Image (cartoon, rainbow, N blue to C red; front, side):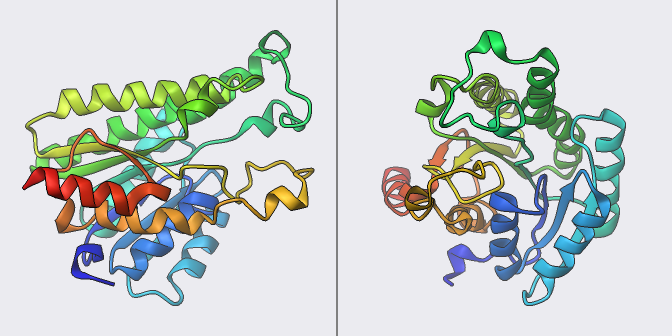
Length: 263
C-alpha cells in the first residue's frame, strides 16, 4: 500500500457498513489505518460487524445502531461516533435498500411503477435519499467547525437509474446524485469536500435477488472494488478533490488523468 492509499488516524463514519459495499469500504479503510464507525439499523449486528472487521486490521472499528430514516436516531448515532473518536473527518453515505424490498423478482419480472406500493416507495426513498440528507445534515456542522472534512456519497450507474422496473430505486439514487451536486456547491470554499463514488456495475451484495442466475452471479463485482478509491478519497493525497464522480472500476485511469490535469 502506497502513502497515497494510507488513511492513518482518519475518523470515518460509514452508514450501512455491516455488509456489502459498506463492509468492503470499512475493511479497506481499517487496513489503511483509519478509525471507522459502521452503522446499521440493528445495533447488535453493527457491533458484531465492527468486531469482525476490526479483528485483523490496524484501525479501530466501532459499531453503532442507527436508522438513517429517523432524525433523532441519526443525531444520537452521529453524537456517539463523535464521542468515540473525538470528532469525525469523513462521512461515507452508503446505507440503502434495494429493489428486492418492493419486488423480489425485479430482474426476471420488472414491475411497472403503477404497481409499486406507496409504502414501499416511501420506505426506499426515505432510506436511500432522505437518509443521505439527514446524516449529512448531522455530520457536516462538525466538519465545518473543524475547518475541514469530506463527504462521499455512494451511487450507481446512470443507466440503472432509468432502467425499466426500477421505481423507486432508480429515482432515489438519481436524487442522491443531485443532492450531492448541491451539497458540493453549498460547501464550495469551506474546506469540506463532497464527491460521489459508485462501483461501476452490479456487486455481490444483499441487494441481488436470491434467484439471480449462477452463471451471471459469477460476474458480479466484489465489494472490495470500492477499497482503492475510498482509501484514496480519505487520504491526504485527495485533499481538495471536490465535486467529482468516481467509478471504482475505472479508478486507476481516472486518478491518473485527474492528477495530470491538476498539475
